[in-house]
Length: 409
Ligand code: ASP
Ligand code: MG
Image (cartoon, rainbow, N blue to C red; front, side, top):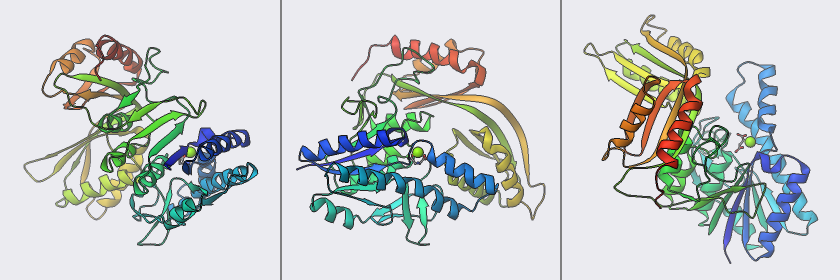
């Protein structure tokens, strides 16, 4: 008998009808003789609705209370699914993250899972019950508080649970059919990718494709866990399978991911403790779930640090307030050297870019005059350009690097 982990995102459980459909699918899987562990997100846009209620009451809600509030969304959908399964005569049980021992660090709003105990899950699976775990949440061993794993974090709950319980299959049901070579809203010829390596998926997610939590594929790779991203609209359709690595000599581009609304900014941190200011800035960003697309630190001869970041524009003014706070005892100890707003980034995700520079050359030629920066590493080429050139650039790159190249698998 095998263990199947199924994750249903917000769009798959947006209404009671959706929940009934999910219950049917879970029931079919259970009746086929598999043990089923479900991780579920809050219904539809409920997390945003709850967040907006908090923001209507206070511009800066305490992060502990936000986590108490937002985790309620997942608890509702988990209990409702258990009720729908009961109506189908399928024995099941819903559990919160803390009830099943999903232990995390203490970072409210972007906690990292440290351990999964899972005793209650194992006991209930053994008793032939479907176990439904409220996604995106855990409990901090240090503070004993309820934490959330970051927006979209139910993906992490599913992958971590599948790894901890050594599941035979891990299926994430989403409002898309799988992972595409580019966002189909920008490039009509984008293709569904049947298979991807963990590394490529990680780069695509950090690059801006919202199809998976950016920490998801990395977590799966650590545990050698293959997983699938599938359509919640057509529950039986195979989507994209993510596993393994791919190593080939010739450069190959797999997909393009992008982000809009970015700002490039350079700060000089002049305090004697510039390195501590730097650490505080990066940790503040991390707590907001932001991993800068560019993060370059250059030490100057006088000990100051020039920090260049490409981050979401919406964070810039808060970040500068934090810099003021950090350097408050020494006013004037940071300075903005440069700022460019209205940027977009494109992550060209693939492999072999270091050993064969031709892809970077093709890009520079094809986008000459619009590229603001290009940064080449072996499995990704990151491009910066102004927002208004983004759509055109995606089409050009998709044609040159994906459509016109023979696929290798
Ligand atoms: N409901 C949470 C969110 O919208 C978690 C999730 O969907 O995975 O971010
Ligand atoms: Mg959600």
